[in-house]
Every structure is written in C-alpha cells, then in structure tokens.
Amino acid sequence: MSGHATIPLAFEAPAPEESRARLDAFVAHLRRRRTVRDFSPEPVAREIIEQAILAAGSAPSGANQQPWTFVAISDQSVKARIRVAAEEEEKAFYSGRAGEEWLEALGPLGTDWEKPFLETAPWLIAIFMQRWGVSPQGKRQKHYYALESVGIAVGFLIAALHEAGLATLTHTPSPMGFLNEICGRPDNEKAIVLLVVGKPADGCRVPDIAKKPLDEIASFI
Ligand code: IYR
Image 1: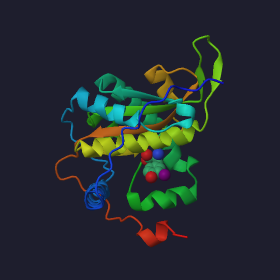
Image 2 (image 1 turned 135 degrees about the vertical axis):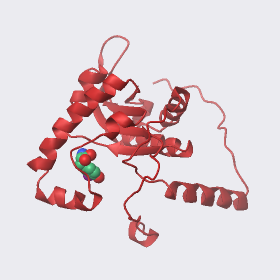
Image 3 (image 1 turned 180 degrees about the horizontal axis):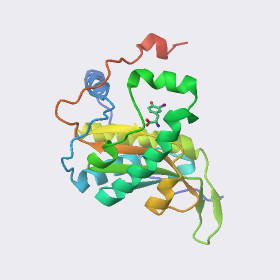
Image 4 (image 1 turned 30 degrees about the vertical axis):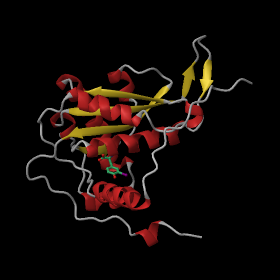
C-alpha cells in the first residue's frame, strides 16, 4: 500500500494565557448565535458565501472523502420553487405526518407550514451528502461516515456564517427529495439540510430559550 507524502504540520501554539483568552472570546461569540426565522431581504455578497463554504469544506471527513456538495441559491425564481415544494411537505408534516409527540415538541417554537423566509432571505444553501462517490474510472466508491462528515461540515458552515455577522436557519423540510430535482443533483446525493442565510430582519425576535449548562451536557471521568 502506498501512503500520501507528508508535510510538516503548520501548528500554532499560543501561550496558555493567550490560548484561554482566544477560547473565551470564541465561546462567547458562538454562544451569541441564534437561529433566526425572520430575515431581511438585504443582499449578501456571493464572495461571503464562497468563503463560508470553503470553511465548511475544511471539515474533517471519513477517509478525507469530503462527501458533500453545497448548492448556493440566490436566484429568486429558484427560491420561489423551493418555497412551494417545501411548504407542500410542511403542510403534510404539520397537519399530521409529524405525529402528535413531535408537534408538541415544536409547539413552543411556534413554527408552522409557512416558510416565507425561503424567498425573503438572500441565500439558501442546500447541503447534499454524497452517499457514494464515483471514481475517475466510473466505479462506485463507498463513502465512510458520510452523514457524520456532512454534519461536521454544516457545523463549520454555520459557525463561519455567524463569524461573518450573518444569521442562519437550519431548515429541514422533510422529505427533501425535491431539492435534487430543483438543484439538479444526481441520485447518489441526498439533501441533509437547507440552510437559510442572511441578515436578520429589523426588529427580529427569537424565542427566549437557553442552552444547557456544562454539567448537563458533559461529564469528566
Ligand atoms: N421541518 C419543520 C419542522 C421542524 C422540526 C424541527 I426538529 C425543528 O427544530 C423546527 C421545525 C419546519 O421547518 O417547520
């Protein structure tokens, strides 16, 4: 078996105090992130979206297979088609398909089948998982930990967009098969998340909810 050539690790080792100060600032900044459902139509430059996607594409992935495709949509007519298709699924979801228990869990968020933000926000980013890849010889290549890898990449993407001062909504109309057709993606790709991206609308309000404290999410052994 032949391995990759290696290069020296470009590793930054800050002094402990600097390390702590940087981490604290990063944590405080991330903890200010809120999911937003009320977007401004103000445009966002394509370059910002490109940079954020590059951040997402730097995520670790199984066997470095990078099993993701990001489709960034700003075209108003494509966004309108996505809204129509998503609302159709969401109508079925909210009128029973979700089941009582799920709808009860969503109750406090006040969400419903109407998704005007799919047209208002300047960008939608559909993130697809490549269930398998295709080698240059046209052979199917198994992808390892594809869903985990895409999940990590979406986390990077959300963090990068937050860093750019943009708001996001992690939208998951279910099922999302319509996105393959609208985005022109092949059968080996499955939409995982539709990320809504833009500036929050003036006067945007968000639910008064909190994140769990450390002792509820971690244990140290
Ligand atoms: N896809 C629906 C329902 C929904 C599901 C979860 I889990 C949420 O955290 C929020 C909404 C919708 O987007 O309305």
